[in-house]
Image 1 (tube, rainbow over the protein chains, first blue to last red):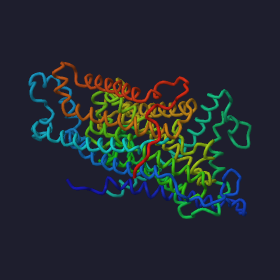
Image 2: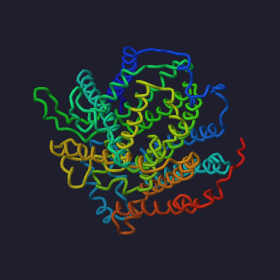
Image 3: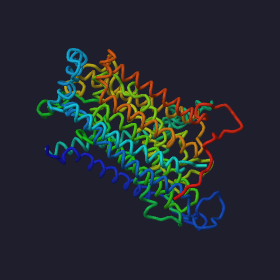
Image 4: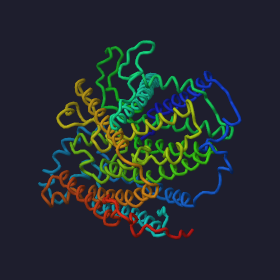
Amino acid sequence: MQLSIYPFLPIFLFAACVIGLAIILLVVANLFNPVHPGRVKGMPYESGMDPFHDTRRRFDIRFHLLAIAFMVFDVELLFLYPWAVAVRPAAENVPAAAPAAAPAAAKAPTAAESAPAKPSRGSVAGVHQGWQNRNAVFIGAMLFILLLVLGFVYDWRKGVFNWR
Amino acid sequence: MLLPLTLEALLKIALLIAGLMTAAAYFVLLERWIAAWVQDRLGPNRVGVPLTKIRLFGLGQPIADGVKFLFKAEFTPGHVDKFIYFLAPMSIFAAAILVFAVIPFGSALPPNIFPASWGVGEPIQLVAAPGIDVGMIYVFAVGSIAVYGVVLGGWASNNKYSFLGGLRSGAQLISYELPLGLGILGVVLASGSLRLETIISQQAQSGAWNCFLQPLGFLVFAVASFAEAGRLPFDLPEAEQELVGGYHTEYSGIKLMMYLVAEFLHMITASFLIAILFLGGWHFWGLTDGGGPDGNTVTWVVAVLRIIVLLAKVMAMILFFMVVRWSWPRFRYDQLMDIGWKVMIPWGLANLIAVAVWVEYGDRIAHSLGLPPLLCMGLCGFVILLLGWYVATKADPTLNDNRPRRRLISPDRHVEKIEV
């Protein structure tokens, strides 16, 4: 299957339009507004007090730990998306085949009753997928999730998620 | 090929941007009305047609607000980091609108609105960028840009309140992105596609919405999208009483408007996603059945009905968001983090594993039990929901017990020494 740029064209157009709109709004607002700068007006608003030291000081390490934990888990989650899409047979992924697949899906329980040992899922697609192979995929995915859980438990035990 | 595609896309984009800006403005009015109703006062009811005495229930208020934002002093404080200060509201505003590129507003319109000589033979898809296979990933990716707008805005403002607000809000947004992703992953696994149209049409085919099949995933996703939208009870980013407005303390005029519009658009996006992923999209039993699940042979009546059903669901979700905002107090920051990391992520993982097991072995299990597969899956879903609830409340009794007590802190909530 060839990857075409056409479906993505509206997104690029949309991005250009929206960024253009944001710039136009800023420019228009800057054309019409009154400008009266002042020394006190330019000070940071901190409840009316004079600011007494630099803003960008050291902050709590927990934000940093949290960000690292987020990076790890989010990337692991992203790796799960291809599995989530591909674990289903191909026929159910193609929207054009959906009406054709509808009666087959409706008949699935009765078909399963007549042939109990063999679920009709793999055969609908015309793609032969043996149960042995699918079991391996399932176990692999579960092991991957187990890794995620292990990291999660480790962080929890280390106290990364404690905020008081 | 290229020109009609571009024209169609531009037309949809113009409609979308205009519609979304108007919707955001009028949802502000609606929210103020609901606030007034909750607090037993009148709310905005004065501004109507200008230069006359016609009041129109205050329907002119959003337009007046917009004009005011445009003509207010575009003041830039002297102490800010100029480039980032301007970039932050633009990025959050653009990203909030851009998400709608792949969100469908119905199934499809039949092509016979145009004269036959125009040669429009295909149904008109009600989405700005139809045929994107990675729709859900796109929504997730563009939605995450909001973190940049918030953190950069807080950083560039060079104000301690803004800085603290930006930090807190950044931590909140990234924390709740994980449960959000887990909730989405359950739906993607069950329907086997990242296209939002396909996710809806699968729910329409089976007639069982995902909120019945995976109630725990629905709960996790709904809570996480409340937090991502920064709505009460998760509005820590701009806790007015503590942070004087948080990351947008130093913003005024049109840049503040960009932040506020983006916030409302986040809520609208979240409502659309909840309606599409879990509440069946445009499907309603008996109302929207004719015309095929992907709308290829749809009639006008059904096409319009589908749009109305979807928008009614979205509207109901938005009203729910607003009523929750005016009836719940805000969480404390440690409560927020505890709910995100210690409750929502384990629940999301449990839901994901349950759905994975179901996709793999569900037909066999249902057959051996002699029940219809979908009914069986729904029952399992509710069992897992109750189980998750039970385990979580056993682990932390303060979760479902609201009675006043002397020791609100459960035993495991002491500060531990963090070893790095």
